[in-house]
Length: 470
Image 1: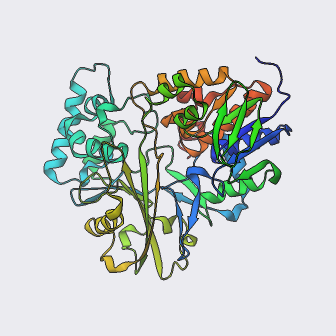
Image 2 (image 1 turned 30 degrees about the vertical axis):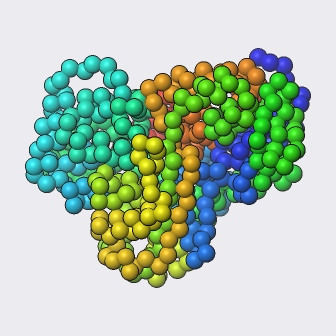
Image 3 (image 1 turned 45 degrees about the vertical axis):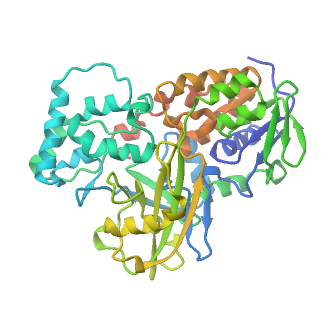
């Protein structure tokens, strides 16, 4: 353990991880810190926007659920009891012209007979077969679900999400992210022709009543000393030897410890260290296009309480659509006359996107899958592209990223957050917030960093979830 810190701690990034670190330093009474955020507002990938028609949009379909009591308590304190809306998850897969409750394998009775038979046969084929070690996600999918579900849903949907072949993705991230099939449960549902929608850690969630997900991070940032948080402060260089951060405006700031929440490859580039740059170049990510669609008219009755939907087929460019005005009626100017949908489209060199026609393609896709009756319902659109959407958990991402994080720590740099740690399995908002909290606590009092180094432990079912109380 290094001696107690006497000099400044600098934080780069005002998203959940950076704000988590800042809030913990503030809570522990450490006053010698500054946070630099390049944007003009906090939130990072969890920021929200209001368009010129008064609609609120997130950067993707964020929801609030928690693996941590600490995170829950912090959020409880940000808004009053009336500041949140609670939802029970209702999600569907659009497949074979049917709306099938998620997860698909628990609701195979909704499929047409031929596809249903193929999926059931594949599940039992997978059970009968040998169980060699999985080399990649595609191996896991075929071994676990069988060829029927693999070909009908898992391969096409996951390529749409990850924008990379499943053979290029590892399996370390699975944990509570993929619902493994329970054949007894599947058989009972088939026999009873029963919908089964209760799987997952986010089967109950909440959202801010107003302001989108970004309201959380605006409120948390506002609780910190205003002199400690600087917006429009873009970092362009890190002198590792002299421990100096350089901003785009030419300012320099010294540090004793640096908590960086920018993407790991960007951080490596700022340092100029060739070994770190080369290591980070092995890390892979997707980019994300978010397209918000303002609508007039009525929501179809069967979709009124749908939260979000998955789209594996080629009749639409998006992999997921969120019914954003259902999350909160205040996400649109007047819920009596308008509503909103928000689509997400992934991009990578393996899956290019024509940005010039994407918005039109999304609208056409909404019509093709039956979410809107006519493109004439569209009042306006909003779109945003983010370069860093998801870190790809390639088979060697954990090793490469972990080695680089440790090398940075030897030089008093803690790289944390969704892209700072480059660990998809702990990339949710609660994970990222706690990565920042734990980094700050480790630096000041030597407490452990469980999230970044022990993802499986923090993703284990919460006691309430194990007892069926979520």
